[in-house]
Amino acid sequence: MTSFDTIRERFATRGKQSGLVGVLALILCVILGGVHAGWEQFFHSYLFAYVFWVSIPLGCAAILMMHHMTSGWWGFPIRRILEAGSRTLYVMALLFIPVCIGLPHIYAWARSTWVQDSILRYKHPYLNMPDFIIRAIIYFAVWLVFVYFLNRWSREQDATGDLRLKVKMERLSAPGLVAWAFVVTFASVDWVMSLEAHWFSTIYGMIFIVVDALAGLSFAICCLRRFWDVEPINGSIEARQFNDLGNLMLTFTLLWAYLSFDQFLIIWSGNLKDEITWYTQRVYGPWGPVAVALLLLHFFVPFFCLLQRPFKRRLPLLAGLAAWMILMTLLDVYWLVVPAYKTVHPRFYLTDALAIIGIGGVWFSLFARELCRMPILPLHDPRFVGARALGHQHGD
Image 1 (cartoon, rainbow, N blue to C red):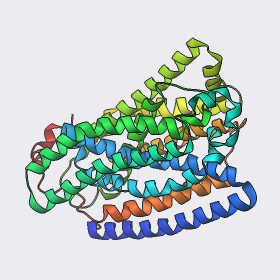
Image 2 (image 1 turned 120 degrees about the horizontal axis):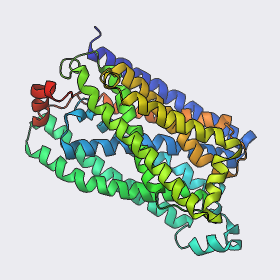
Image 3 (image 1 turned 135 degrees about the vertical axis):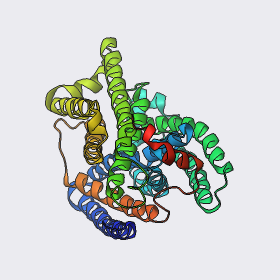
Image 4 (image 1 turned 180 degrees about the vertical axis):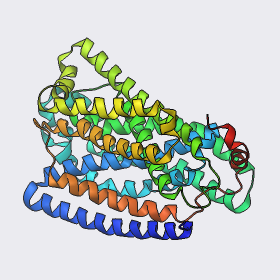
């Protein structure tokens, strides 16, 4: 059996390699955007890739706070992964700078022609470049404040074993999760929904809340599979106890389907011209197969898999499905973002691939470094001690 130190060393090496690949991909994406595809296509691709990748660290932060709130044992094997993922939010804040630079290329309301549109003129007090950037700074500041204290207290708990730190993390996570959801809602409106400023939905932010949580949980399960067969994880958690992680994934899958259908039903039954065009573009015509694929592959396939208890208790199967859900999140973001650019047919440009590889490579490089900085399992947490002693009772 390979030791954990060897696995961690390999993980860190792959992180450095992915960082190098990511930087090269971003450079190529910039060159291609400036020379061939055009800056508008570059920024469109960059926003699409950014919205996808930022969902993972945001989801990690949400699942981490959910774990502290509930003190559920299910969070202990993935807690370090969630903490490392949440600590990458500061690099995502830096990677948001190109979006701010390319605002006129991305959003119609950021162009000088906005005065010719009465609706955009009406929304100008909110949708304008200075306020957009200020709000983005506030969003990241709120997220990073909660992430900072949760990770700081976790490190102190490892070092001191102070029981009061557990209470601090629990008390901070409750308001933190509310603030996280509130800010994610506003960020989704600013960054994605305002691509089509004439359209609006009050459920839109809730959909992104679930998308982020599902992406973060799925990524954590995939990483856990990498470390499952080495000490100390394999000696602490029984395989059948992954049932809870599968149930949590099933819950988010059902919630995603419910909110997506609820938004569709309300808008379609309202039959208002300014609202239904968002769906007619995405459900009919060339984009229809993408919508059908999301229905089948993002909901029905994981739904029926996660109904099976043996499936949820086998980590290789659960991790495989988690990787699939990450791909479906990418497809979901593609379906939400790209049609807003008035693309009649689904098209995947080279700049899309380079932006995904570039941002993903840089992000994963930092994640790998952060994950290797702390023990893979929490130390001195009294909840974890109880979970290890009574873990066999929580597998059902």
